[in-house]
Length: 302
Image (tube, rainbow, N blue to C red; front, side, top):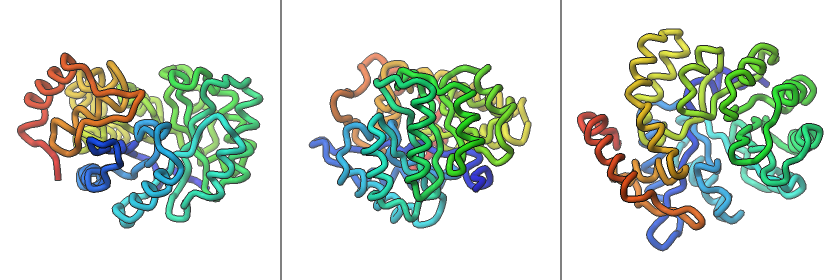
């Protein structure tokens, strides 16, 4: 099954808002979902690492999935994140989580364990066999400690039918080019690096699963659309206005950066679960200055 037509363009890795008592803030999550959909994103991803999924228990995860389906209400496709380093446990999640209304499962590669390339292949093959929905690989070695090599990605793409695409966030342009050169025609390749999305679109990527689209959905989504239309000059002009924001979002931690943006925009409370903490005052002040300069004239909060 090709997902390129459904999941090309801009997907957003949704944050999980919390109240001051660290409980999930569902009204705020609804506001974030409305913000991104009303400003043009093509689909949403729930329970990614941007959603602080490592600090959510299984019942909370199931509840967030159901809430997301209900609040999205068919307006855009929903992708569900199910990843980790316990293959057997992930298989149980794939069998028990409410995935009926999802279009695909995004699965980050095993973290900390640092399996071999053969281990990564075997892990994803077992997930694909168990999953009722197509699997999107997620390669983010800066977080997991192990790169999924281009050769392993292409092997999975060609040999495992239920592997439908990849979110590539290794930050390695040569690896991206190698995957794009030899991928099957129906294999989705999207960026996982906001700051690299513009040049990666020029290399032939199908879109992005973004962090910045939580707080700057209209501008970032338009940049992606222009890039996919090969209007590089126009896309670059928009991208240039967001370069500082990319740095501010990730300088200390994700999602601390994007939560600081959304809190200053009045969408959520600035609360994270430990071991994550809010941004330092110095970075928060820079975000305030950026918002006043770049976003206040057309602040999109509805």
